[in-house]
Image (cartoon, rainbow, N blue to C red; front, side, top):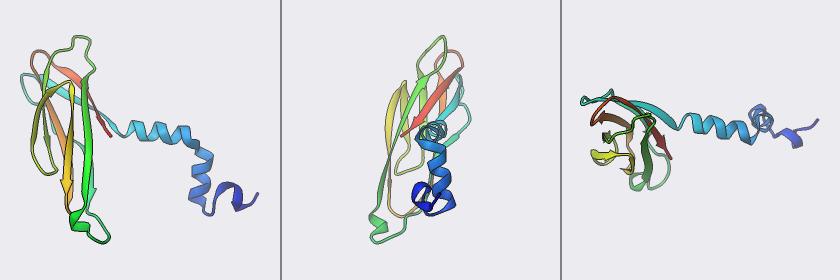
Length: 129
């Protein structure tokens, strides 16, 4: 077997052997987060996305858009409040829903989210896309 089948490097060979399905499962697993929405109290901050600066020409003008959706996984769903920090502004929202966070410039930042339930505690599924 030559490199033409599996790629030019061992990493390429492993990627070819793992297949597209495993990659999709891996990416989906690490883009979804379980966040606790405490009853009338804020749950802990959970980091869901990070950027460690940008390379290349015009890095100071770079803009990233991060879509974050949040939905309850509870058997007794109720509204919940969401706070998102990181990026260009602090966001407050009510879930279930979706927000887009904008990160402008050549900066290092982390986006974190926390939730607070309006009635009873519940798990919130946060998806970053």
